[in-house]
Length: 171
Image 1 (cartoon, rainbow, N blue to C red):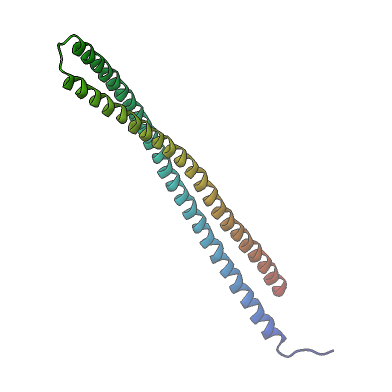
Image 2: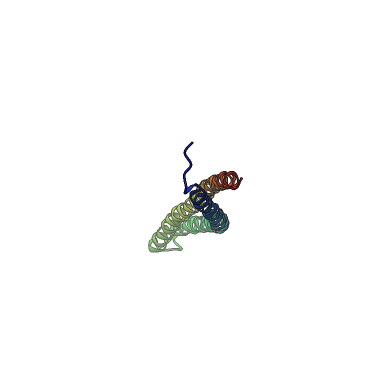
């Protein structure tokens, strides 16, 4: 039989390299644990930010709804004033210029209602977008966390495998 004179030294070197590899895997696991925590923290902050956007959008919708109601009230008032001025003009109590002023006022208020309803629809879209953003954030950070956890489990598996190899070399 052939006996390598450097067998003990080579085995010792191999065992030391494996021990260093175990330490390296331990560092990687620790690093990945920190990375997972950072991902979860960032996800929570992003979700809070998106929740704030939802609250803002809801408040904008409430405000926009109130504005639409106010403008509708203005339209009713302007319509009543316009109709009165027509009646008073027919009776000879108001000049035609007053009727024209009331017509312009009515048209102005009717234009405002379109603007307010458009703002309200924009606010409703912002709410929808904020809700979609929450789903996107959850998906994105769950994917990042899953990848980091997978890497962590791989490192742990490699670490345990290397420890087993060290134990074999020691025996």
